[in-house]
Amino acid sequence: MTKLIIVGSGILGLSVAEYLTREMFQGIDIKIITNNHKFSGSKAAAANLATKGQMFARDPHFELKLHGKKIYKNWIHNLIKEDNCSLSIDSIFKNGEGIDYFTSINNRDKHYLRVKQDDNLLKKRNLPTNSILKIDENKIKYLDESWVDAQELLNILKNVLIKRGVLFEANDFCQKKYHEIMIDKNIAHLIFCTGAWTKSLLENLNIQLPLQMTKQERLTLGSTFFGDNIIQNFKNHFILSEKISNDLKSKVTFSGDINKTFISSSSLRIKSIHDMNMEELNSKNNIILELAKNFLEDSPNLKEKYFYNSNEISQLNGFRVGYGHTEIILDKLNISESKIKAFVCSGAHKSGYLFAPVIGRIVQNLLFS
Ligand SMILES: Cc1cc2nc3c(=O)[nH]c(=O)nc-3n(C[C@H](O)[C@H](O)[C@H](O)COP(=O)(O)OP(=O)(O)OC[C@H]3O[C@@H](n4cnc5c(N)ncnc54)[C@H](O)[C@@H]3O)c2cc1C
Image (cartoon, rainbow, N blue to C red; front, side, top):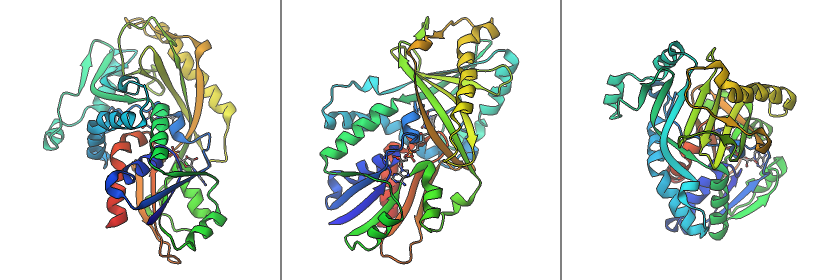
């Protein structure tokens, strides 16, 4: 029996484990060691599976994410069935339109130029040229957005993994744990799915960093607000809707639908994961939430009127990390003192969720190549 240890139970740790515990992999025994950090990125994510603003030219993972999007619904559908839970697929995953709202035509056009892709490049990659459209005076419409309820997805994944016999150990992965694993002859693989903590953890364990992680690290602390019926007066069904401030520097993102809406708010650049300046984050959040509330005053041309009911809002905070334009760090680690094959698989920036249905297969190729 091959033993595999995954460190971290965010979206990527759980998705990798889900793939490697499918029937065809009988004989792999998986344990997930996790400290369930309350700022684990995934818990704060509303998980907009958006293509907006993700410019193909500079995004090396675009094709992969597009494929992930295509198979998402089916993947979740199968997980719901296996979990035997009563949730409907529609309450967890949706496809549809996304709308950006601007305060002026000028701002809309500036942004359009930024996100609109080059038609020739799109055609070359077999992608539609009309998925980003200018509509009305103040809007840009994105035709192919998707949305997933991050918390529900994590719960279902955990339930399915427990049913399949995966062990969860609630523990902090530290030097002692690492040395225990290094001398355990039954363990063949070790995968760090530790998100924003990965760099500092590897440094603590004296493991050489993957090349991508030697690029400048951008750590942020961010919040997501959510609640039932927090949007009032909103007439349209929506998947994703962003309101952009007049100076184009801030935006507030609404996702989900009227029954369960997420508001993804500001993020604050931080120097290290020990640097949690909640006061500063909360004051930034207040500015963003005011933007959500008062948007109509700044934009008299907007026909839609929606407000949130701030009494009903819950808040979750999380860390996010980025290295250049790389959106996922997937690399072999050099551990010379042991026969164990070790890897990093951690999400960066704001699209970890897009990789969830496809990441397992990629990790499988790395593990068994
Ligand atoms: C406010 C906010 C909004 C976001 N919005 C979106 C969005 O709309 N769409 C989207 O796709 N993405 C979004 N993201 C990003 C998304 O959350 C990340 O891309 C994703 O969480 C990365 O997944 P991960 O599994 O790599 O890391 P994480 O989800 O951060 O998981 C890391 C795991 O490692 C564990 N861990 C860390 N160190 C140790 C240790 N020493 N020992 C044991 N366990 C450890 C943690 O407890 C955690 O379980 C958002 C992030 C934030 C903060």
